[in-house]
Image (tube, rainbow over the protein chains, first blue to last red):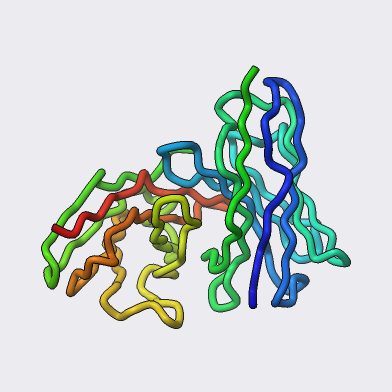
Length: 120
Length: 109
């Protein structure tokens, strides 16, 4: 079964850091771009960042550029999101997703999400 | 990055058709044929139902169809069913980034 499983969410104070992980299974992780998307309570999804198969082509959304770092470990079939200088507005469910083999511009498999709460 | 504009809600009776619009700019929806649509149930992850404006992934019913004209993409659900009651989001590529729509709640009356 093709699967993505996020972990690492939790409660963190403003200004703090958190590292999210996403474990991939059931497909050849090294063949796909992967991405992070978040969804604040009651809001629509927000695209955060993506990374190519080799980890050397990375793009960020404006709201997280300079604070978040996306990376991957192809040996461990894992995707990561290092989140620094967290703000209250970063409170959201964070999803990892892979791009489809039939379209490099659509996300066909999503994880179940991990919740990040930023509050003092 | 500004979100794409969708109607807040649409509704229809079982068997009817509903259409959800997704309005962007020439830098996203109008500039690329890379619009996708996602269906989301409460407390669940989004599910891909349309990609590259008009294409359906395997397993998605052909009641779902997509189109685009200028800077506006559309999702049509034909033969509405109770299980179609969910939130729907469009998403467009925008020059190395992606932007999602504001979301539309579909209610089956």
